[in-house]
Amino acid sequence: MKRFGTLFGREVSRTLQQPLAYVVLFFFLILTGINFQAGVLAMNAEPGTTTSVEAFFNSLLFWFPFLLVFPLLTMRLFSEEYKLGTIETLMTAPVGDAEVVLAKFFGALVFYAVLWLPSLVYFGVFWWVTGQAPVEAPGSILGAYAMLALVGAFYISLGCLASALTDNQIVAGISAFALLCMMFFLGILWFFFPVASPAMQSLAYYFSTIQHMADFSRGIFDTRPVVFYISFTLFTLFLTYHALQYRRWRA
Amino acid sequence: MIKVEKLTKRYGGVTAVDEISFEVGKGEITGFLGPNGAGKSTTMRMLACYLPPTAGRAQVAGYDVFADSIRAREHIGYMPENVPLPPDMRVREYLAYRARLKGVPGRRVKERVGDVAELCNLEGVENKFIGTLSKGYRQRVGLADAMVHEPDLLILDEPTIGLDPNQIRQVRTLIKNLSRHHTILLSTHILPEVEMVCSRVIIINGGKIEAVGSPETLRETLQDRGRTRLEARVGDVSAAVKKLKALNGVREVDCSEGKGWNTFLLHVEADVRERVFVLAKTEGWDVRELSRRAVSLEEVFVEVTHHDEV
Picture 1: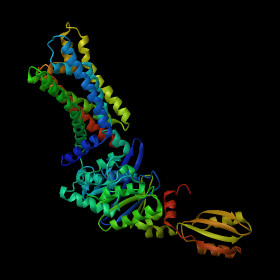
Picture 2 (picture 1 turned 45 degrees about the horizontal axis):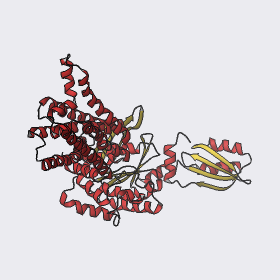
Picture 3 (picture 1 turned 180 degrees about the vertical axis):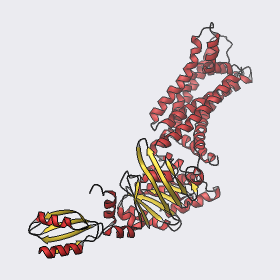
């Protein structure tokens, strides 16, 4: 792990130095801004019990850009190196395969954090303008951002895997999107199991990202989703590591 | 410096490299010579620790390229074919990144980057984006990258491919100068290059080593296996061909007719000039030329790599 720092620094600067990053950031902020605005308007329209944090993290306008951003973040990670052939100079430098996978994963995670950090400003502004705290309990906002990080890490790892499997960025992006939609909509099955079958319902809860977010943004902390996302992230990174090696064994 | 034992690489059902063994000593410039698809790049990729071998062993600087890969890589500077480089980095930035990646200590990075940039004549383009560079400069950036961490061994896959004659000459001079500090293994299918640059040649074809030696010894051993040219006036051409063919050491005779004079090209396995002369004398042919073609490495190459097709 001697060279991890160098690789990680390169990944971060590579992401932040490309124009695409700022295009993504621009539109992403517009969408999340609209989402926040919609939440505030809804709260103004009628009295209710939702907080602005809950409104922000549980609307369709939140999930849509949330899901869309992962393929864009991850599709070039490995595919571009394969296409340019720079994977060969990279892998013949004295660095381990695991270091490469982790550096790319954390590099993408850093940009993901850059995308979401400005949203903290929204709640600050809300507080400042209305004189009301955006949440009633601090655990609610902590929970929401913790969930954001956990789901983000898992979906980025899925994107890493898709990118490690192909030298075509478009294919990588689309398969990443398919993979994470699969995981995401597996959780929506929750809504289709009526209360009558509690066994299926509790099974579906494990996969229900929407439900996890709903709970965490209300300040309810549950270890099950935490374990679920961390273990699936590690497993997907492990698969990515093998996909990277497999290309060389086969090549 | 390099020790290869029965190295084999199979892709699916195809054997790209078939049980090759060779050694390269410290300070040698070894040329890997072979037609396209002979297994040169595959062998070099295995030595550079990129591809794992299917069977066999290879050691670089005493470290196994598979079992002790990371340590072996620290001693290798590898430049892949076509020199893949990230287009979005500046030359200096790229070299500094590569230096750090290959373990050059932080305080020496700047110095090393300056050194290799100077050595590879990269002054003036150091702040340009790699994507905007010409092929010749890209090649030199690749070379600078390969040696930025002062490796003992440089593995250069087709270092002069796609360059114009001036650039080729520059790169060759550079490689020759490098041999003072590095052991070099380079591959090429350009023959004059090998004769000019290399102290040792390994000819590889179909995944197997066909010949090993210095360019001179290769030429000498194969001198006799070259061609002998006879220009003579003979009565019956087909009878003459038959008689020439019957001579000991002659494999094949090509004949072309001129104005009264016939030119025979004899593919031989030994020096047959004397026998041809004796034959011509007894047959009463008028001879105006009997010569052994000076063998170039190119002919050695053709002879060695295409012997079954001739």
